[in-house]
Image (tube, rainbow, N blue to C red; front, side, top):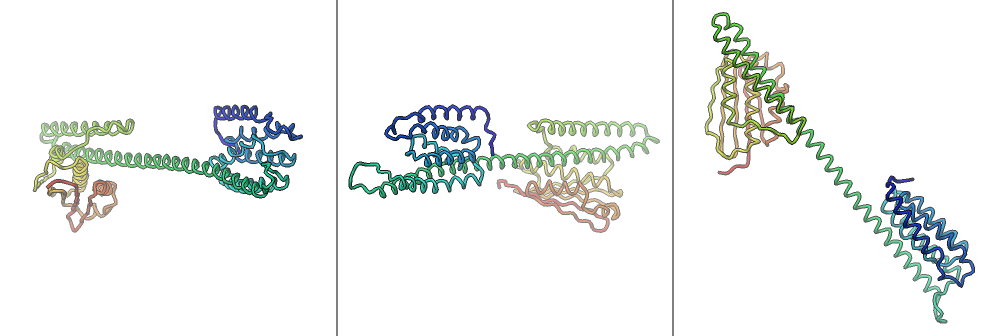
Length: 384
């Protein structure tokens, strides 16, 4: 019944209604009529309808209709205060509910019909011409009223459509913001998984090696502890950067690139893995940053899995940087039991597939016998 429009709009509408009443309630244009004493009454109804038109369009329409019916029962002629009806019809289309909107549309036709019928019953003659046909004047007045009411309602309907379009745009922007936030959270979760899983795998492998080597050569144990400290410190720095991104979305922080692959390979070799890397052709200078990040994270996760599930054999890494694409292959020896337990359902493999898909690539897993192969193909727009 009532809309929330704020006290400022209520005060403005009330002030306009008071001024409208003062201008139309005591007009002397219809002095020849004996019943003009009721003009302030009709002006009061119309002013009330004008005052609450935006607060309650439905109630405003009802008050305007009630005032018009009282006016016709008192046999009053058309009055200047009837101009308020145009404003009431406008707000029913602009701000009213769907029911009120269509009641306003129906009121345009019923109002024009009521005016024509009322003038016909009163026998109103707007001219002193003896050849004037009152029927022509009544029809013309009805058409003018219908056009005026219809124009007011159409204007309100256009404003309603504009507001709805603005609301739709705002809802779309809100939905895009939510989707972007979800995507950002997913990216940070993948980065967190990559950093923590890789670093812990290296630390565990180094700690196990140091435990046995320390019995025969304490220096090896000390070197291994230094590697563990370096790996843990690097992981801690990465985790802090990701947590900073969660607190401040604008602080993206530096992301790893293919220039950091040597350090990654060094960590894996330091964990005691026989890592063989073959890069042919070499990377070009136009590799997008998103592709570099995807290649780094895929290699990081694949090598972490190889470190976890290794059976003593080596790990082969192949990178082929073609113009406009790159193929990444990581192959390692692994027992069938340890990989088939998850068989591609782990978060790491899901994350690698998502990494590849985000940059338009694909990732396949091959597990045959005691060989586990991760192969990713990533295209990009590059120059020849």
